[in-house]
Length: 392
Image (cartoon, rainbow, N blue to C red; front, top):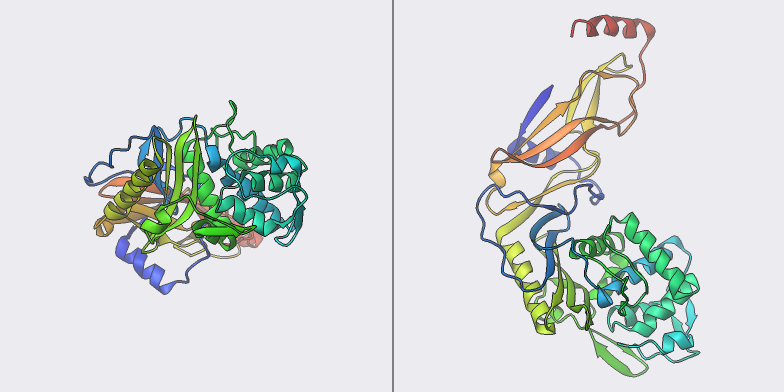
């Protein structure tokens, strides 16, 4: 059974309905966009690994070896922060907790917040020192406070990476200092950036903070795009001699949020220039639309042997699509329901499929699920429906 929806019908339904909660994670996140009409090729990026992805739809707009392993350098601290944010959210620690700085944290090489052995420093200040100043000393101190030691903390990092679907990432420390087993990819890093932005908006503002002062020493954020482009609000730079110059960036313009990851650029200026080129390309030639909201009734279908005549169907999460600009009017959507729907039915049970097309090309598919439970009807009604089903 199929029901076709024009986009105008969809828009009307959205205007008349209630807007749902923020989008849930989508299983298709991180797939190349399907182009229905010609758009210019992405800018030439000299870095060996890069990706540009829309946060909401998950469509990849530009890429170069996005699943190839590369040393993350200080991009590792994105996961260090993510783990600490999770611990804060769970109530296991608080921003006001005082952390005693160990000698190991004090001796951390590379960029520093300049804490001293025995200092009592709050979790909040250590997070700012790590995020804004890229302090390795702050990173080690946080790892030790959360997990006892850095090695155990790295296990937590890898567990979260696996849960987030970062299939080609492995952490060995909290700082990103060189290690033969430390690796990530551009796409995995984009996944992590998405998780930080969506799960922890209350902490995300730190990634746009331009400077932080501790112990009378003011250091500036190394992400110079924060000064160059007002739409950029994060996330993190990284550099080691074996990794080159890395940058993960997110920007939001007119409700559309993009994430760019550049790994292995040959200079600090190159990673800024290449990231900005990717972002400008995505915003200039593409647009993102929310077509359906979670828990909104999109259609009804006949319910057999049930206590009610029909059951409403919707989608389990908000549906976003990223399309070339000026192609919105060419979108269409169709729904199909799998066979006769027979009670009992549980809430959220997959019963069909939604398909969104652009110029006869399928650009998004999602399950159609029941919006409520449906119990069996009386014995007489069940018997009648069983007889009728034989003639279907």
